[in-house]
Length: 150
Image (cartoon, rainbow, N blue to C red; front, side):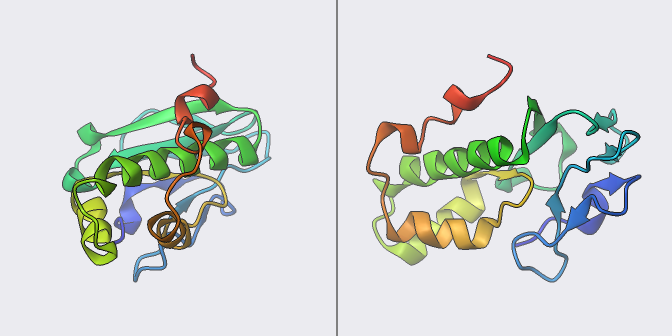
């Protein structure tokens, strides 16, 4: 399941790249250009000249912009990516008790889970890793500790 290519628009040609390995790859990437601005549908622009933003949403309503939110303010792409990793892992761990089988866990996440799109973050590979390797520490799922807006 991939998000439609029309979900994010960018003024900067370097801004979008492959996401989730689907037919319509999409990944939110921030640029370093002083005038770089990312647009998501008709929403407010995301200023990417100084910070990086993680786009989060709900797979159950993946085409509904009312079910998406942005977590702005990460100083580096790596910080935004780590937030996305922990966010997704937290979703997987929350479903793991109910869906012990790997295929069922994957289907449940892609049906009911919440996603995160960040610079350099490859959801498919991370999803495979999280399903095969349960979180070992609380820090593995503590995405809130990385939220620059807290």
